[in-house]
Image (cartoon, rainbow, N blue to C red):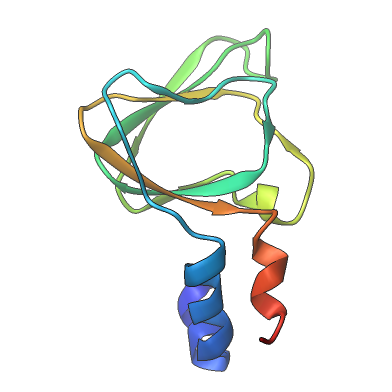
Length: 114
């Protein structure tokens, strides 16, 4: 999607990078989000390993499910265009993980011309 958008409108793609994207380093075991939390950003996992956990108390999972999320994965993209509530929690599994949050609040500003 991002490559296609860049080929269609490179100026808007650059505006996204300048206004809506930030880089964050997180430590091992640090929580990125918790079940039931309203999400206001999509996350791109740049590197490292994270654990995404769903439990029956917060999702439709029958039993607790733990999934490994590694570099190159997108998480919570729906937060960019909808009111998204997390049904699971995610924490860093390795030290020095990098993630790239894209804020829903800044995302609409990318289409505005200066």
